[in-house]
Length: 377
Ligand code: NPQ
Ligand code: MG
Image (cartoon, rainbow, N blue to C red; front, top):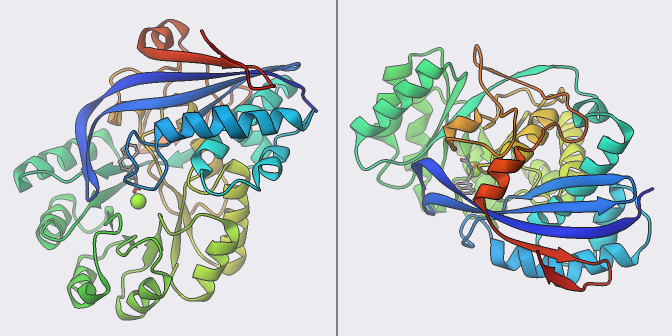
């Protein structure tokens, strides 16, 4: 059990090495919220994966700051000493904001594991110490730019390529990339909800490119639409945005809408719920893989530990930190070697902060007492 002493909300600004365009917009820079929780047993860090704008989901950074500062942290602290699993329980009465809740849980988990001297990978009990690494490739203005980018990732050794698609950027990019990477390379697509039920015949044409899966073609709420699409397409349908809890995932699987699951801890409210979804999918025979939200070394280390669990049978979006950032805020950024990422073993979530660089990219710091008193740091 740990006593909560103080929370720090720290915002950092990082440039992306290259603009990342998806069907919901283009990202050039990140405004990332980090949490640092001080307890009687030591300090722990968590990363909030909310974006600056409510585009991927309803959450966004400014909202996360308010939700955590004014509601989640005071409620959490008012409950007295706690273990990591208490975070979700105490915040259960609050609707939504899974990424904010997940960041708090991660910070508490990091503090607890560091105090116990064990790493998240050990805590989860994953057997593998390295995992195959996939890369997510954005939408480009031209096919030449796309192919040059994909060739670069192939040269880096990535074990699997995921292409972002949208209406008007699908068949031709997929055809040319399949031709470029050859028949053996794992290839999949992610639509980020850009299609409609009426696009079924169009999406069926993807079957000829031997894709691992089609990720989230339809809107988040449209579970039945995904189930019907899954009946029509040979390529497995994978859900991302639609899966926000273990119980919702169970329903989607039962309805035939989720042939493969993308698990993102932020989207489902934390690493502990992510493990429950993994366990459920294993029980139901549904393959899972770990998604990515352009995490810094904090979230990337923790995702690697999660993805080492045995149900993660497909390569995830855990690429090298350099896929997105020229320099990471940790001293031991995730790298790729021989198509694999090594699961960190440092106590806690599995990283050490590069304090000097972290301070350099910090744009604001707020300290919050357990009773909710806020001070600018
Ligand atoms: C996905 N991620 O699987 C997401 C979507 C996504 C790696 O493809 C800033 C922060 C920009 C988070 C763009 C990948 C983002 C983001 C896309 C997440 O659907
Ligand atoms: Mg996705």
